[in-house]
Image 1 (cartoon, rainbow, N blue to C red):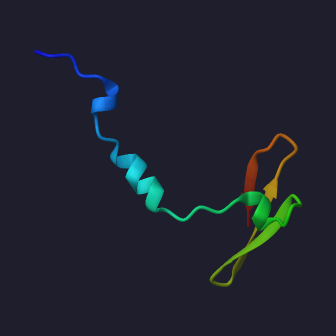
Image 2 (cartoon, rainbow, N blue to C red):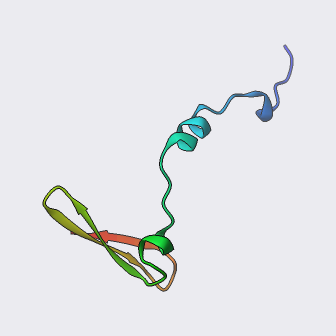
Length: 58
């Protein structure tokens, strides 16, 4: 049996993530710390905390 290095394994999750749309939170908030996101008839608030975390509330 031969040893296999981790780099020899394919990483399917990486290719899936590469195909997903990416959005910069600071661009969504236009440099601020809050933005509104609309989904159907619902409005959500995206907030960037002082600790750099994202909070999404309805």
